[in-house]
Image 1: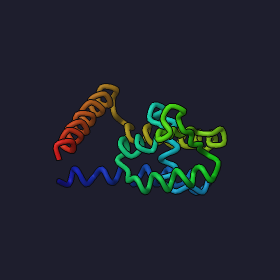
Image 2 (image 1 turned 60 degrees about the vertical axis):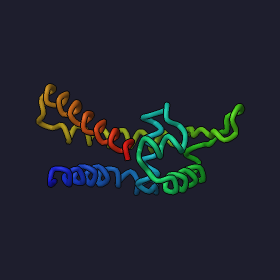
Image 3 (image 1 turned 120 degrees about the vertical axis):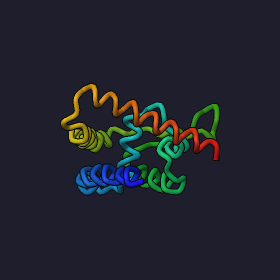
Length: 142
């Protein structure tokens, strides 16, 4: 099972890289992650989407979205046809943070795939996707 514990090293490295952006803009890791998630996945723009896709807790997402809204980085908007459906939009004030985040994400990806051939990268992504799909399918069974 040591193999499975090693994913924490990757997560730790990513969070260490993003810490500079978080510190600079006075964000928690969760706030940063939500901003980047909304930017990278505009089709998932509700709190429920964030909870479901990122496997985050409702309370953490809700608290972080409130803080992001208070900081003027996101805006919540009710749908006219369904008052319970609240969409979240990044505001222009978040663009500087997002650009810094994209730079960190690019550095992270470059460092993680350093020394791998194009073929190895494709294979790695394919295998990882299969592993994640297996986990997702087994989560549905529980």
